Image 1: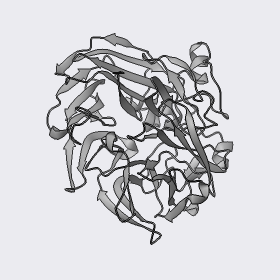
Image 2: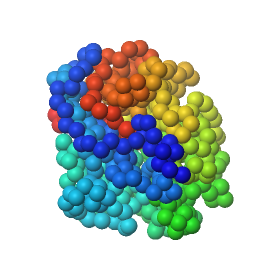
Image 3: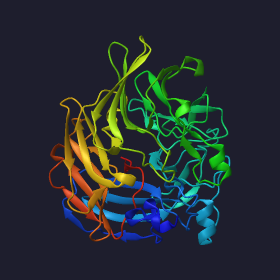
Image 4: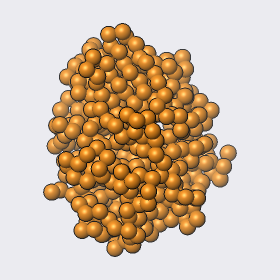
Length: 447
């Protein structure tokens, strides 16, 4: 296999090499008032050609992208490599300072967040957070002031009431997964090691008022793949089984209750909440399997939006289909993390994880709206930004990076969530394309 035949290196999956800084970006429409901050994104952007036989989309060196909005204008766009060892060696740049964990080279390519006034590129499977400047320059690897004992995650969940980050971390050398709670000040407040029977890939978690939801699913570390030099040595393992656990927020490992689910893999939950009778509802994007036949990316059948209702009294999980359109990267109004929501947003996907239109789900009415940008125009993960701190659940903006195959360029599109299938209120035109990546967030400027 050559790089030309790897779908995750073709078209807008292909990396860009130049670090660009552009000011006063052209805008079609009007940027809404009150949007002052940065829309950040990150994804793999291989700095050197990879071995096609070992390649995995998830392991490419990271590149951060950002657009800053202020006073109704798009002030700048920047893209910068996250300076892992592979990047600094390839470019002849100085090595970045900071602690190390395990055998990782400092790659951080999966999510980018604001925490305690700082910006972090984050990743799972052993990598430490990488602190970036406001302008996305790499500063250092970070263990949160010496308080993080090892691996972090790409998917912390922010408790809207406290500002704490709740995370589940894993690393192939561990015989457990680790619950990590980080304060809004960027210091780890609590860790719990949870023994598991294997070494599962645990990409995300969910939280409710009283629980952290733990996914222990059928993708595990594969020693044979590791010994053969595979970049991501995790494989579909149907003999491992699949289960979901409820860890009381202040509980210990012995307090986790486990519940079997049908064989599957979940990268991302949409949200979770508790019912008055004690049941726990977890909405997930469910893949029927993962890394079984395609070991270079997430391409093992259509991922669907499903609901798991965990009944602790009965010891069972009821599984239902919410929407059978293939989709990923679910998001919602994050003021409601851990509480019931009505609206969820996601991105359509096709074969070989082809990006597509955006979706808005009304979980109460059972309906779905589609925002289709037209031929050749597709979108990355949608991010919801409320109009104001006390605005209604869908009174705000959907912001997403988009790609136009006809021009080979990218934009940032801003939709009103209540006019989801209508025209954008603003389209910010970027000076280059933004390769398909993983996650991003709106990080408002400090008040």
